[in-house]
Image (cartoon, rainbow, N blue to C red):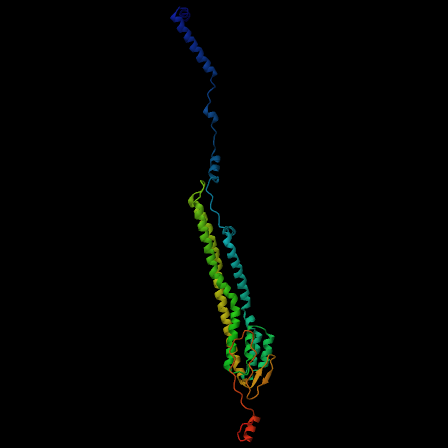
Length: 338
């Protein structure tokens, strides 16, 4: 009743009543338009104790953004990154392997001084005063070897003084040893030259690395560029040392083996030489292994030298008159017969 009466009031009172009515209607409309409030308890998920334990027992998943570990050094990649300087080093390595195998097989005792040759000649020289150079020549022909060549040279000096025979044997041994030592010198050369090849490749790689560091792009740093260049440059030095060290060891081993074998051969020849001293000035040996007597008063013909034999020949001896000439001188009272 009072509200209706107030509403019916003219003027200002009627305006206030109208505003109150509009505000009340707006509040009612807003309350109806807003969604119902969401209760938090409806969305909460209940976690049981078994689920918590399973989460604790699970291993952590690997992190995909972790920094990758550096990979190992691959030998093939190192060789390929060495560049053109690896080619001569590779050739020297093949040369070292080939020479080492060939010299090891050649410097065997059975090749230099066969056992059959040594056994047969020792049996001929027992006792030494019955040594037969003809049979010894046949034994050397049946067992071709450096020892047989040296002993043949010595036998062809039969009829000459013992000093000349021993000197001829020594010269022949030096020639054979030098022939067998020639390939070993290539191993010594490889041991000396291969590290220098590797060092040359390293110096060149360093020059290239520092040169490229002066023209860097925005993506790479100077330290990264230099480290990669130095890493590549040192490959050739590693390869050179890897070839030179075995070559030096093999060269020294083969030289010692060569000296030991030919020293043994020299001792064996000096053991046989006294067996030829009884033929000095009396008999000589030809190329066919036959003994021929030397005529009294004639100069013993020198033995045919073996290829490469540079031993000095004995000086000629003045011939002495024969028995017939001596008798003629006696008959004429020592006068010279015209």
